[in-house]
Amino acid sequence: MAVREVLKMGDPRLLQVSRPVEAFATPRLRELVRDMTDTMRHLDGAGLAAPQIGVDLQVVIFGVASNPRYPGVEEVPLTVLVNPVLTPLTDRMETAWEGCLSVPCLRGVVPRCAKLRYQGFDADGSPIDRAVEGFHARVVQHEVDHLHGILYPMRMRDFRNFGFTEVLFPGQDLRDD
Ligand code: NI
Image (tube, rainbow, N blue to C red; front, side, top):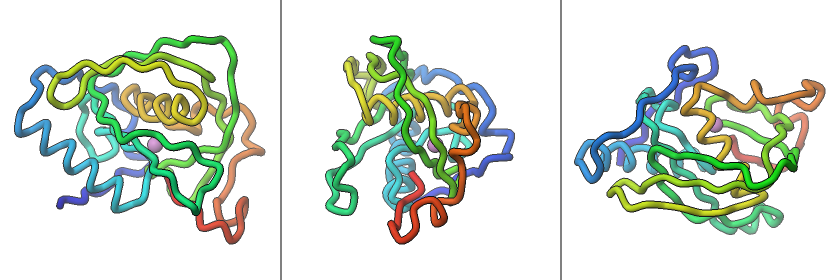
């Protein structure tokens, strides 16, 4: 188990554009995915992108198990997505609260495309092609943004909907995502 340090907003490495992965099923890629999974689980996050642990490769992981602590949250299958390509399937935008392990203790309301297709590969190079909506679509957009050097506050339109989690949602014990 290797829990890696998560970079925080202000670190210039979070603003870089990541490089595509060129070789699949390699020990190096498997180790990266294992470290990302360990780190995400340790911090109880919903997703993590390689740049957040200082690796400038197009690799994201995400997944949310059903949890009685978050009754309104949809389940998202644990997914490793390499070299992702997103295609919007609607012009409709939805707004919802987001957090980020690189922006700890804060939450903000972010507009996202309501429905999209995502394509890419798993760590072995097998293709992934899914059409998703709602929370699943939101998580994918948040993580893939990290590969383009974009953090969720850069997507916000109204900074009145931005603040400390403990103040916005007192007593709810919300994780940092
Ligand atoms: Ni994030």
